[in-house]
Structures are given as structure tokens and as C-alpha cells.
Picture (cartoon, rainbow, N blue to C red):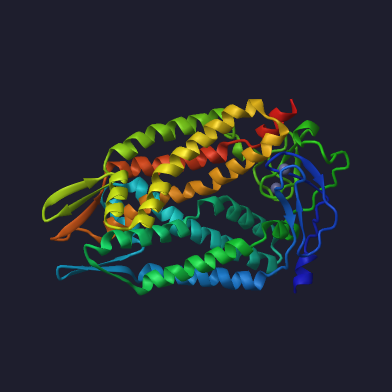
Length: 417
Ligand SMILES: [Zn+2]
Ligand SMILES: [Zn+2]
């Protein structure tokens, strides 16, 4: 079967561009288990692994089934002074929307449920379409899976759930229900699928045959030779062509990738961080008395109650990461003019860390979502979202967009001058 599939549309590329530094490389024969990296920045241009469609299809379907069951069953149960309440996973979004935090509800719904489902359905569709020899359909869904990939936050949500449990464990008896364990299973299968799917392998199978670019020279940037690099399949696309001939992706999709856009997003995120830390992120009402708490107030509370490691995680995720990320991006932009080739690699590491770490700042938003859903309208205690929640959620999304809008090719372009 695998041999048949590999022969569907053999589009083994011999020349590829690096989407990170724009350098063109000529790729020799890559055997299974081997990979081809960009000689300048180390970006993986192509990696061959065994074609494990049946295994990945089984993992994806299992993940979807586990999530569907997790959605219908109780997630966490909470007992306090004889009152028992339970929440489902969907309540984490619904309750925010009930308290007029619709935008936050949408963020939680998309990153924890809808995008992960869309990602898995896209992969299932890709494997089924390959079996049915429907290449156009496979290309569409493989592109879709690449587009939603950066927005999956199930692992962050799981850590947020554990922090919520620790926050509330001193005040009430909390039980993890079957829905929670099924969600853990879903996260495990999703992550395994995520790391095992070899997108470039799949593009070699379903990508459209592109004509050989005889005049493209390796060792020189695509830009200098009148080409753009497709970020989805790493093939070269001539200037003036808007859709990649191999994968069909819109090459100009990232028109907003510019220093101006990065700067605008950084300024907006910085402004939002002020109310995010100044105003209360949630309000706890106990015996009729309201206790608003800010992000830093929550950290201090965790610290005082003896949960130092958890306090440190929330402190790093909510305070250190957003500020460090903004400073790192500003620094990278400012230093881009004074590059030496040796410094480029250090800055590349800083950029990669900045880009990877940003999503973990969402922890506090997920903690609020879970506590609001779990501890609601009780006679003894209830939790409401505070005004800072939306400001903080928006700031995190904007810093993620700022990192995405950062044009890494600038490192080398400036260094060459
Ligand atoms: Zn490169
Ligand atoms: Zn492409």
C-alpha cells in the first residue's frame, strides 16, 4: 500500500527554499530516516520518515472520539458546604460568555476545542483522500492543518486545569471526573499525532508536480533570484505568482509580515498589559463579600498558601513571558541593523524561544475560565471573570501575532549589506 501511495504523484523536489532565511538549497536523494536542513540556519527543509498513514489515522480518530466523549461527560466536580457542582469542558467557554466575556469564550473554544478538532479532521481527510487518490482534496486539507497548527493549546489548557485545582483545593473538595481523564487521553493522542505527522513527507505524496527550476542557484537567496519561498511546502515560487504551484497556498498570505506590523502589534500588546495587570482578573465572592484579585495578587496568594512551584509557573507564564517576549522582539528589531553573521545564530535562538514560549501565557486565562465555570452562583462562594481577563487574553494573542509577523529573513538580509 505504502509503495502505491508514494507513486501517486512523485514530486520529489531537488531544489527547496528556506522559509526562515530565504536561502536556496539543492537537495540530493533523501532516504527514509534522513533529513535535509538549511546549511545557513538549520531549518528542516525536508525529512523522510516511514509513511505511517494507518497508524496516524487511527491516532487521529481515537483523539476525536476521546474529545467527543470528554465534551459530553463531567470534567470536574466540586463539593463545598454540602453543595455539589460539576462542570463540563464546554462550560469553560459557555460560562465566560454568560458573564459577557464573549471574546474570551471564543478564544477558549477555538484554541481548546474547535481548532484541535479541525486539525484532526483535516489530517483524517488527508489520509482518506490519499487512499481515494483525491490529491486536490488532500492538498486542501493538508494546507488547512498547517494553518491551524500554531493555535492548538490543549497542553496549556491541561496545565491551567491543574493550577485551578490547586487554587481551589484549600476551599472545597474537588474531584476529577471521567471527562477530565478522557480529555487527558485526547491531549496525549493529539500530541503524538502532532509530532509524528511529517508534513513535508505528505507534500511529496500529494503536492502537484512542479517544473524543474534550472536557473535557480543554490547558496543564494530566493529573493535575489526573483523567487519567493512557500512556507507550507518550501518550494520556490516566481515573483508575481500568488498561489504556490505545488501546494496551492496563497504566497502573499503573510503580507502583514513587516517590521511596521510587528511594532504596531507590540505597542498594542504593551498597552493592553497595563490594564491586564492593574485590574482584577477575577472576583471571588465568599459569604457575600467580593474579593477582587489581580494576576500578581493570585501569584502572591499561591505563594502564601505554600504552593511555591505553582506560584512560580503562574508568575513566569503571566508576568515574565509576555514582558520578556515584547522586550526580545523589540531588541531583535533594533539590533537587526547591526548584525554580524556570528550574532545571527544567537538571535535566531532567542527568536525561536520567543515564538515557542508565547502560548504558555494563556495559562491564567484558562485558570479563570475553569474557576468561573466550576464555582458559580454558589451560596457560599462564586467566581466571576474580571475586567483584566479580556485585556490579558488579547495581549497574549497580540504578542503571538507579533512573533508571527516578525520577518526572520531580516537577520541575514541586514548581515549581508
Ligand atoms: Zn535557512
Ligand atoms: Zn507550497
